[in-house]
Length: 292
Image 1 (cartoon, rainbow, N blue to C red):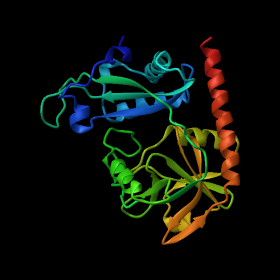
Image 2: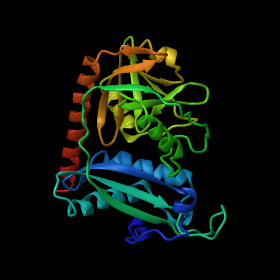
Image 3: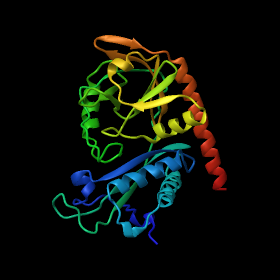
């Protein structure tokens, strides 16, 4: 029986590793607390689905979603011994492995898994002021939603962001000017009594926190819709926030759009942020009980 732990390497990637040469792989970044991974099941599902869509492992390996759950749990527990902090970050990167020169992968390939430990930056929760990035996201349905290793669009967007005074982040659009995401977070906005978030079937990263929020909204019977939305629609919103696995929810207070500043009410987003934090804490408590 194959275990993903057998694919973990502790040394630097080889010069011919496909992650280095082609960005051929996927990853997830996990907020951990005292050896436990927040959103464990969602991170495991992400790695399982992304690796499957990229055909990273041979079907004969017989890997299941539970194998990836064990991998995430192992990474979180193993990294706790490397830190003096209760909260820390575990990154799990899956590469297709070493290969010969050229785009075509070896058959069979032997994937490599890198687990790294990082300090959790002080994720300030103060309301954000954002603008519109000059970098458009290209469309590729085969890669849409996947947190793959090709992140040049985000790198360019971050470089653009550095030049903007007063922006905490930038909203990224696709080539049809539809709202997709921020540089490293998904986005939600409220119009009327409904929360809206962009469809990610053509481009963008489907974040685990986005999925967590869907689960909470479903549980609480709070209305939300997923679809294609342009900036003109977002400009009518009363509230907005962004989210990712490390900072949870961050409230968006204002958007710079067409030389105007659109102000959002922060009260509703603040309330939802508290509720989501509690939702995640309860899930973490259940996980701890399972492990005792």
